Length: 127
Image 1 (cartoon, one colour):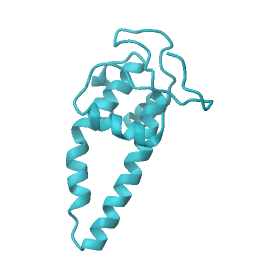
Image 2 (tube, one colour):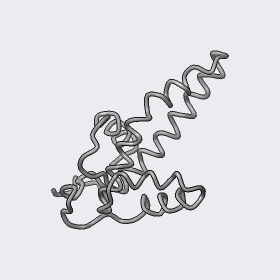
Image 3 (tube, one colour):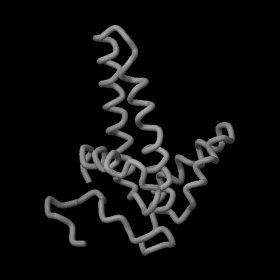
């Protein structure tokens, strides 16, 4: 999965709280989100008003919650576990560790193994 593909998939699955998201798809989304946030900030500076960054933040709240839930589903945890972030410091650390954990290799209660992963060769991976 490429950065652009991961970021567009993020917007296509805007309110999809079901299923799973691979570790690579999730981290490529994070990288894409950082790049887009920087571009929005630059646009804010050029225009002289802080309008693009708040609009981007507002538009991404629900899809961000959805991709966090799908990533937790990949390690067989409920999406509600993202509320652990409400525990100061410890919650954020636990959530980052879970996001970095390798997903289940087999089908779990949230669905089949995600097909979008990093390809180690130039060929299309077999499904």
